[in-house]
Length: 375
Ligand code: SF4
Image (cartoon, rainbow, N blue to C red; front, side, top):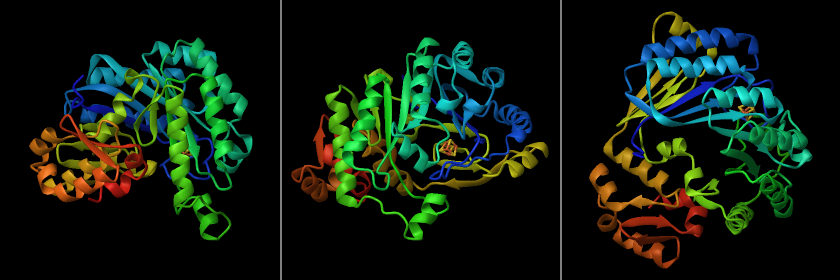
């Protein structure tokens, strides 16, 4: 599969309540869903033709599982009508365990959604309460079981670690419970306390302590060892797949500068050297579309150097690393020659390896991927 085929992202900007750590754009005014959908269908029509064909569709948010199966089916029908989807597209939906039941899951599987990400976050009720999640551990188990019964054979769990006062043992316990469900994919994100969130404010007020660098490193290494011992492939800093074919085809596009189109409020798009993003406000999004204009807030054109630095940053976050000849052709930069000294030192220190024409981060390299990219 050519990973340069564009991917389509659709942002559903609604949640029943806001989680205490969340910085994604979403609103709890769910009465605006019909207006939003009306505008989304117009946006799909307006951009149809700009991108030829997609091989992935990712319905994210927000909480897409708040929509009814019929609404989701209509979105996919409109996508198929206005764009070309290859014959075997990966179609993913993000969900909240509290919304999932057999009937909902059976219907959305029937409309072509073939990959489901369940926002479990933790198998510890105290952690769920602290994060402000609106579901229980029991609901997470039932949601995954119901997904299996509805025919989903690609189930992903999203989990969060590094929560204040969490120790490694309690986190490993969450991972142990995750494995009971045999998910095809597991994302383990380290909690970040974004300034404008309730947890960020509590942190600034001195009410919370977060793991220091050393403990963060231990969380990362233990997670990786634990899941690799269980047979998972640690293919990106935060992502694990049971088999190669279970890795997210859609997310790969963000990591290798493939084109993608984002629809809905706050969604970002990328094509060649241009990035643009929609208004981070449902009202402004609606106003713009209803005035017949694309709801784009800003566009930026990236220089070759910016693209190269981004590619380095993103590539070093993935196990497959950077294919050096491809990098040279695309970004006009010979990494091995230009960075010979520092790469040699990083290799000696065990952070990277150069094999078969690729620059790979080692496990320790992946743990410090953000600093590695500063070479
Ligand atoms: S459900 Fe997801 S998008 Fe909604 S508030 Fe929680 S973390 Fe944010």
